[in-house]
Length: 275
Length: 121
Image 1: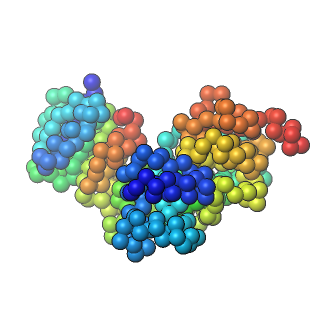
Image 2 (image 1 turned 180 degrees about the vertical axis):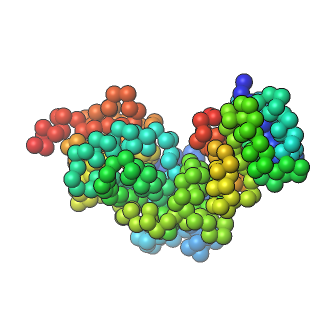
Image 3 (image 1 turned 90 degrees about the horizontal axis):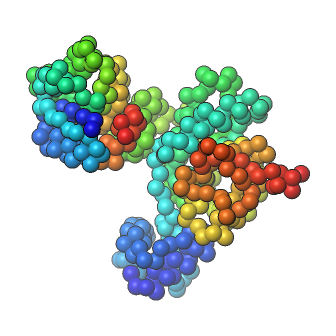
């Protein structure tokens, strides 16, 4: 790819999704766009980019933008947030909620995070009588959401983070792949969503998992997204960020829960402001 | 340093596993069948065992059942690593005392993920 082609892609991706593309990582950009060019019938990446530059085909533009967003994910990624949900959050919310607890998995990619949440909730039903949870999952990529919706995972995907006891409890082997049980799949509702859009219509959530999403943005976009998430979080709700992400210096809408890495609640100032 | 015994009749698998496990900080011992693995455990009980299912002389499942009856044989964390990957086989491995299960083929990421799952990493 030429420097001009890379600059065009980076600019397009940043303006449409907020995601910052590292223009020095040519190999990464090429590895993401080469399959798109093949699928769309272009002889190479240059043909794909020329078509975008000349015709501004919206569908093709979004295909490129979606392909540049990270889809790295695995079941029960990092473990700690799931332990926090099980040990710290669910007991509190299960006591205080009459309505179903609403959990939002932001940037769910191919679905491993929301499905991990669904399995965890199912495992916890014995500890919390009448536990009701609604799980919403969103991602920028339609292609990822389509895969997520099938609940079908490869031999390698089910071995990354997923304990084998849960594998045989919740999955069925279909030839060389594994498919998640319909009962767990039905616990998750999916929606394509761009975090740059106005999120006020998404409703209120008790728990928001937004992990390893913010790092893809520049600081002003991070602040804007976090402020929108604060409005989507119930007053006594919890935000869970990636273990290497933080809100300090980015927004005052959240404050960390002491001793609980990656776990945040809404800042009191924001609550007063909203009252 | 913690020891992991790799019990597999394939020299290639033992070599691959050894490289990954040594990089992860384990001292690695090898056995080519279940009987050899049992003899090794009777001499020096390892902290972890990466165990193949189909092996000559004494297969992985028979080895595991005998191991768990040995003095101190309840201690090692046993991770099966096999092509026998139907849900029924996995359930049987757990019923016989396995702690985790890896389906072949595997890579370093899977092995490390599974070892982390059982607290070995």
